Image (cartoon, rainbow over all chains, first blue to last red; front, side, top):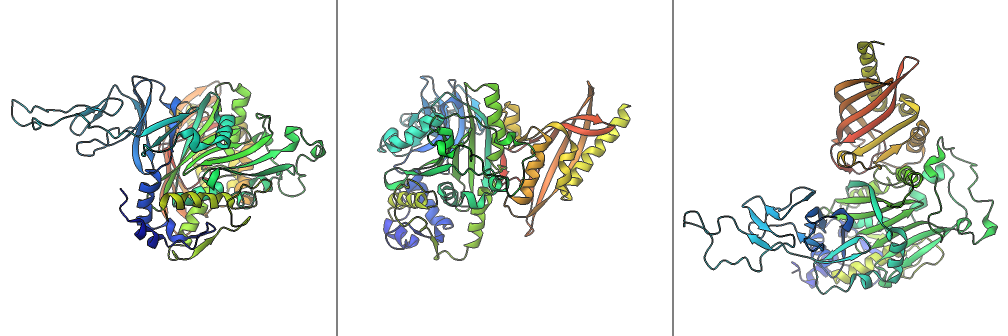
Length: 418
Length: 157
């Protein structure tokens, strides 16, 4: 249950009016609001991304992750199903799995040796009958109904999602057609993890998720491509939004690559009239992987999951809240099982553009922390989100808009009920 | 070249490399590598799992140069400096003119405002070749012990 009444939360948040184009900064720092988010969002009627099913291929394989800031275990059970369990012993609340990954016949809490099956059901209690007839659990103690709490799980392609709320809608309708279709395109094949990053950031999780949805900042904060004159004149793009704007896709299409517009041929590359020449242009070598000509697609699924295609660099990201003023971004860098050696090499080289040292993404690791520091004593003042208007409508031909961020706040207000 | 002579030169290479970065002479940094080279910063977990993607993966000196041009002219970050502490330099020996070495490192990061923290700790796994009697990194893999990177990494390890 939520610790705070909705009335109290409303007063605490003090949302300005009915729109989603202004956000009070206290929302990024207040520990009470953070705690309510854990209940109302991460344990609410949403699907949380947990990991890839292929990370736990065999019976007993597990990885430890977080849903919101609740520690969970994603484990493959005997019947091949995937379970997501709260990583907490029902006896004294100890962590059950203390390694980040492993394989186990059953899950054992080391504190007092209480044992769970791979679906989280309690199967054994050490010294339950006492020792030599003395001590032990009361005779009426039952293991029935006890265990590690089990979340509702659904998968899409190889992606595993979990929810604390059993009444949440089906994953496929939560995502919707347009979002599913992009996931199909980018990661709907047999994928292979080719690297992981864990980036710890000094900012509230929402500042990162706003950044992901902020198509306005891309060419302004990230100067790598501009400095080397590799901006493409033919880039065309826009924003797709799910209903209410909870999920988004910001994309660009290179018309010269789709072959649709011959007029753009010949002025493909921005002339290197300013800036620097690359000493080794193999960094930007790419191949046309997608017939649609999409060169970039950043997709977010509410609240904290990202699917990324930047040229041939494919990755999933999950922004895990770590208290009101920190978060950890987990990156799954992906290739496909069918990649040729050359294609795999191109993906590895392009991976220099993403991650904590990414030439076009590193700035996202620090800018949230700067906002956090600058606004520390100004919780009542408001951020401005009016680029591209004040509404939450898809933007067909422009990315100079903050509409996706407004969509994020639509979702936030609905779930938080403020 | 005797083992002792090679060892002395390789140790100096390690120290010069660290001073070059810590003294912010980053334009000189690519010159520690052969033209065709491999430089990677990768977590211990990913390295042990045989993952090809690291936090940084450069496959030529040119890519190192591009990183430094980007750091100086394009990337945006809070100013900071590193201090490398090297220890346990171990030259394992030579095979086909390639010297193999392993060194422990700690990088302490000091921010402009004064925050000091241990940013990275791990080992260098190196392949070194001599070009005109000068030792150069043919391959340098920086395997960091944590899987986590704090905020961002722009200055090389």
